[in-house]
Image (cartoon, rainbow, N blue to C red; front, side):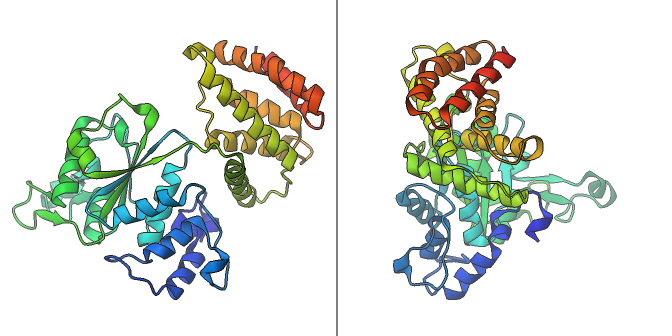
Length: 371
């Protein structure tokens, strides 16, 4: 079934694995949860030898175990869960995995934007049915959050701080009262949340000041802050995991040389250090230099090598992809990358050799073309 989808949700992609974990799960399960907290943790973080199960469960989210445990515990409480962190830290992916493991449905999602309205988190109406038969429960269109309430499952709210205060105020009522009133109806006019209902929201820490959360809404959430991955080994695992998924999805057979992955990781580490020591925004790349952006650079290079190259990933293609992905402002970003290439990549290519000289030339060529 997942082969028929461009991007299968986690509960479809890992259906066999979830079935297996359910079949061996003897632990206590809150509400209507499909898996116990221990099995949810194993599904997300992977199995260990000490778990004593007869098949390996691969790790799907790479981060501190305590973050996952606190998230699971929160969803067993009265509060919603707010995952907050910089772009590319895996907040949405963790939210999807949690919902998939708890209720086998991660698709009840509201995307927060400036245009998100109260209707998007409560309900709206099928106009043609209202004209034909009047307002009724049948002519009502429940939001993903209301559907989650009725089913007693997890609803998700992406980019909460991008939605307006009116929408956030409506969410306060849902999280505190656990029901939604439908004043247009005389009968059957309240939707009560069933046991197991909760909300996982995400917020970008760089959006601070866009639509700050009120104190009342903050009290309805437990915050789990997801830090930027700074450990090179962990970041390499994330990039490799996501890239292998891409290769499988596109049915591409192409090796990812460890030396090129090292170059990519080192380049991002260098650029992050430069951004941290910059004294003004003009001296920083517009890119957040997140792990997600590293994955994007590598994916771009792999696809280019597959379709327009000799199906071998080369340092020159990787450099071109990195420059093309990170040079968003002209001339500011190009100047920053040019400085990095001359001040860091050039001396390193002379000292370290290997793939660095080809990476140096590829970057120079890309910067020259864009300039």
